[in-house]
Amino acid sequence: MYKKKLLYLLVIFCCLLFIVPSVRAVTPTRTPTPTPDKTTEIRDQLITNIASRVAQLKLVEKRGIIGKVNDVANTQITITDSQNNIRFVDVDELTKFSNPIVKGAFGISDITKNATVGILGLYNKESRRILARFVDVMTSPVVIQGGVSAVNNEDYTLSILTKEGKQIIVDVENLTRTYSYTQKGGLLRAGFSKIKENSSIIVVGVLNKTEENRLTATRIIFFPEIPSNPKTNSFLKTTQK
Amino acid sequence: MKKEKLILSLFAVLFGLLVAGSIFYFFQITKTSSNANTKTISFVSPSPTSTPAITLTLDAPKDEEVVGSKVLTVSGKTQSNAVVIVVTDSSEDVVTPLTNGTFTTTINLDNGQNTLEVFSIAPNGESISSKRTVTYSQEEF
Image 1 (tube, chains in turn green, yellow):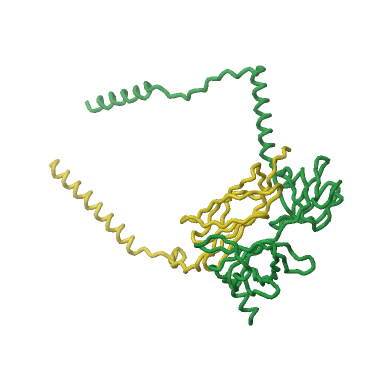
Image 2 (image 1 turned 90 degrees about the vertical axis):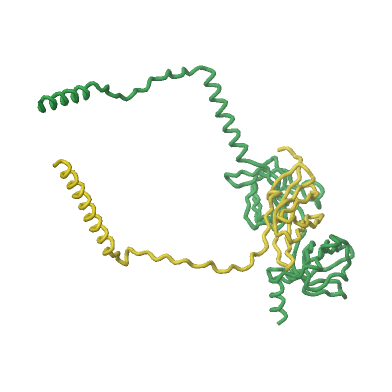
C-alpha cells in the first residue's frame, strides 16, 4: 500500500516536471532600418554645421588687455599683462595701430619695447593667443595703497609705505585732487594739511621717469579713521630701529 | 509512547542548542587579536586658527571683458565692516558693504581699455585689492 502511494507521487512529480512550460529568451524583433533619404542627410549636415559653428563661437571671444611690450616681431607682439603673465598677440593686415601722441601713420614698427599698449582683439581659448584688431599705445596711471609714514609740509611730499614694504615718495601738486573718507561724512574734498601719519591712503599718479619709487599724485584718497596696515606698521618699526 | 518520544527529541534539540551556544560564547571570550590588526584612532582637537585675513571676491566685471556700455556695474563680496574703494583711470568711488558683505556700485568707463582696481580696507587697516581690465568698445569685428 505504502509502495503504491510512493509510486503515484513519483509519477505525479515527473508529470509536473515535464508539463511546466519552458521559458525562452525573447529574441528582439528587427526594427526596420531608416532609409537614408535626402531629408535626413540635410538634417544631419545642418546639425554638424551648427555644432561646429557653436564650438567655433565658444572658442573665440572678444577680449581687451593692457600690457608692457617685451618684444615686437613682424606679425607678433609679446607683452607682459597686468597679472604678470606673458601674452602673445598676433597681428595681421586688419590690425589698426594708434598712438595719441603721434599724428599721422603709425604701425607695428613704431611700437617700442617697454611701451604700455592696450590690445583689443579675438582671444582663442585653445591657442591662448589674441588676434589683435586694435593696438593702442597708452599711458596707464599707477595706483598704490599703503600707510602714511611721513608728511613733509615744506615741500608737499608724502612718504607711503606699502604692505609689501616698499617706500614711495609722493609729490602733491596744486592739481592733485585730495579726498578724505569718514564713516559719517563719506567722501569729501580735503586739503594736504588734513593728511596725518599712520593713516591708510590710496594714491593715483604717474611714476617719475628720473627717480625710482617716486610719483606725482593726481588723486589722493586718505582714511583718517583707518590706521595703516598692521604689516606696514611692522615694516615701519623695523625701519625706525 | 509517541508523546514521550516527541518530548525527548525536543529536550535533545534544546540541549544541543545550549551546548553549541555555550561553546560559541567561550570561544568569543577567549579570542585575542594581535597588535598588528589593532588600529588606534586618536581624536585631536583642532588647533585654534588665527583670525582670518580680509577677503575680497569680485563677481563683476570679468577680467579682460569687452563691454558695449559706458556704465559698468562692479559687484562682489568682502568683510561687512570694510570700506570698498573702486579706482579707475579717471574716477573713484567708495562703497560700504551690506551686512552680508556684498557690495554693488556703478562706474563710468572711458573709451578703450580701462584699468579698474578694487580695494577693501578693514577697520584695523588690513587691506586687499583686485585688478580688472575692462574695455569699452562698440567696434564690430
